[in-house]
Length: 140
Image 1 (cartoon, rainbow, N blue to C red):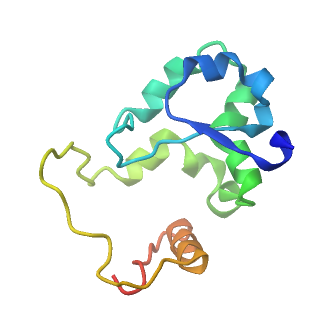
Image 2 (cartoon, rainbow, N blue to C red; image 1 turned 90 degrees about the horizontal axis):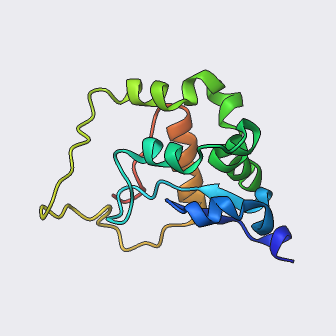
């Protein structure tokens, strides 16, 4: 039942990686969880790489993207090409984005709308992001 219906995720979990075959390799996915305070941002790929030392490439592919793409039926490589989805390529696209940590500055709410966010809203944002034309949240 677990292996058919549950996708687990981790940010930095050496024990989970060591036990990946007991948990089920097809049920594990890495998450960045930016911008939450418990995330490893902006060094997430480097932290992850340390966790995955010694893990075979095919298993790294499943954990870093393959499982999530399969569970969520999303093929970013088909839309963008695998070469545009690497850490280096994504960082190059964001070279003018300020990635410095901000402490104590809060931020504005993501939307002024009181309308609940629906799955359709989320999918529209995702499609826009994959097309390179991220659309704002409706009502925001």
